[in-house]
Image (cartoon, rainbow, N blue to C red; front, side, top):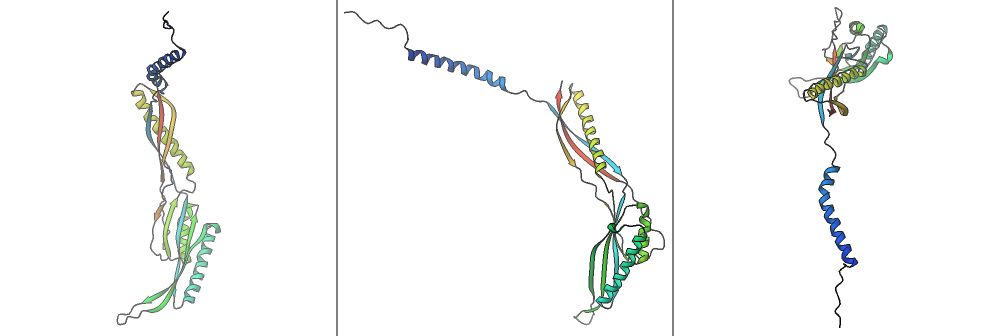
Length: 250
């Protein structure tokens, strides 16, 4: 009786199992190397803030004012105020102010109340009618003359004067350009000191950009002016800030 000899060759299932273990081991060894290889290089960058400004003389004035008339009755107050306002509007027309630059901003009629010392019951002693205008003066050389004509025609209320720049967008663009140049100048200094130079621009963020607040001037109710009204316009300044990020290269 002969004994069966063991098969020196592994079975097919055993060979596949051994191959799978070998591949898993190689993958485990290679995974840290592969992970390190696929990581993108760290991008070096620099971010600087720049500031820019541009100045301009105002070229537009807006006058807020009008008329107030007191009378015994409401009808008399309204009629009297209407007559005075027509005179004011005619004076504006003669001063060269276009109709599109004159706008009614408010109409009012209120009773004038008198409070007597010995009685609790107030009484109406008259009425005050008002008519307010907004007048745009596009030639500031005429501003003093326009105010004089309004007062001479019967305008006894000048509530405010705004001085502004009609088209400020060009000045804001000038301030933007100056702000970018300021940020680049600072960034180049720092990059050069660190042994690098600026590459492409990565991001730009703007801060500000709104027009400056118009110069406001207030005035009390005015009587007829004896002398021309002097008006100093000055300059207005537009300011812009930017944050710019550049790539740093060797």
